[in-house]
Length: 239
Length: 337
Image 1 (cartoon, chains in turn yellow, purple):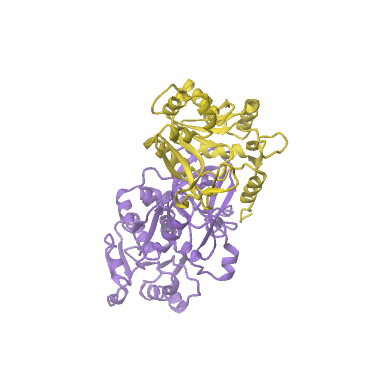
Image 2 (cartoon, helix red, strand yellow):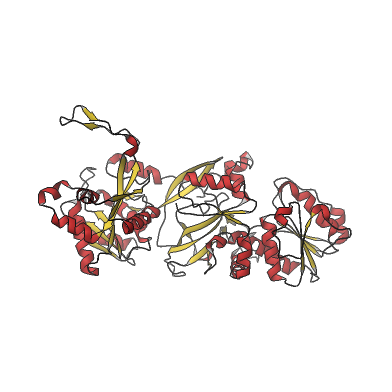
C-alpha cells in the first residue's frame, strides 16, 4: 500500500507570527496545510493520508480538515514527535496499527508548508520509491555552494555546481526498511539525522533523485510567505 | 488547492499562474491528453490582431482535451472516470438557441483559461464520460463535436435529397466531417475536393477524393460543406455555389479573418441556404462520443493524429506548438506536467 505523510509538526517559531504554526496561516482562501492536503487527496495512488501535527494542534488540524470539506477522504491526524524523524516514526506506527506491517508499504512524506507541490511530483516519487529503497525530490542548485572551514570564516571548498542540488520534499521510501535502519541507530546518531533521506544515505542505501520544481517552495520565513501570497494573488482574467 | 495554470501572455511566451480552486464545488478533472487547434496556434504565434490579443491574453490555450476525474463533490462521476471537457460556457438558451450561439456564451481558450492547467474545475454539465475510447483519440473530441454539430444542423435544415454531398477541403476538419457524414448517411455518395494529393489519399472511406483542378465537367452535388477557411474560403465558397444543385445547403465551417466575397446572384438564383457553424455544445459532444465509441471511427480518426512526446514542462509546450506547425493534421500530446 502507498501512504501520504504530511509533516505538520512545526510550531512556527521562525516565522514568529503570534503563536500560530505557519502551516495554519491562510494562503488565499484556506490554510497552507489544507492546500497541501488537497493536492495529496487528488493522488488516487495513495491508500490513505496521515498528518503529523504537534500534539497541541491535533484537534485544530482535525477541525480544519472537516471545515474544508475533506472529511470524505481517508485522512488521519497523528500527534507528532520532538523531531522531524520522530514525527515520521509516529506516523509510520499509526500506519502499521491501521494497516499492518508489510515490506511493500511505501510512504510519501511531505512538508505541510510546501503547498505548491504538483501532483506529477508526488507520482514521480511513488514510482521512484517502488523501484528504489528511497527517493528525494531536488532541484539543481542555481547559486554556487560554498563550504566553510571549521571557523565558519573562510572557504574550505567550492564544490562543482553541476552535482549540487537543493533538497525539497516529498521524500519517499519503503516503510519497513526505514524503521529497521532507524531502530538500529543509537540516540546520538538519530539526533543529528534531521532528514529521512539522510537516514538511508548514512546507512549506505541508494536514494534516487526525483526532479522537483522551483515553485515547490517551502514557506519558512515571512519573506517566503509574502512570496507565496504574491504567487496566488494574480486575478483570474475572466473576473 | 493551488492549481498551476499555463497561460499564454504574448507571442510564444508562457507563464505559470497559480489559482486557488475548491474540491467541494465542481468536478475536478486532471487532463491526460490534449490537442492543438489552429485557433491556439494563431494565438501562440501572435497571428491575431493586436486588439484581439490585448483583449484575449493572458489565457491558458487549448480547448481539446480528455482527462480523468479526480474529485467530484456533485456525485455525477466516479473518481477515475475518463471524460472529455466541454470548453463552451453555455449562454442563455431559454429562447431555444443552441448553447454555442446563445447570448452570453463564452469559450475556454478564447479570453478565458483553456485546458492547459494541472487540473480543470468544471460544472458537471461541462463534462462528458468517454468510456474506453482511446485517450489519444478522445483528446480531439471537441474537434469532432464541431463536425457533429454541423452535421446535426445539416440534418435539420437541408432538404431530403441527399444523394451526393461534397466536402471542400483536405485538412483535419474536412476529414472529421467526412467521418461524421459517412457514419450518419451511409448510403449517400460523399465526395471530397482538395488541393493536396497526399492529404486526399487518406480519405479512403469516402466515395471520391478529387483534386480541385480535376473536377469533371458537369460535376454537381446536392449539398456541400466548406472546410477550408482563411485565404482559401473565397474559392471554396465559389466552387460550392457554382457546382451545387438548386436549393442545396452549404455548411460553412472554415474560419476566415478577412471578409469573403460571395456570388449572391447565383445564391439567389439557385435558392441556396448557407449555414454558418461554429463550436459545439453538450449534445454535440454526446453525439461525438457515441460515434467515436465505434472502433472503425476511432481507427479512422487515429490516422490523422500525430502523437507528439509527452509534455512535462513549459519548454515541452513550446516544442509541441513548434511540431504542430510541421504536422499536416492534428497534434496530440500527453499532459504530464
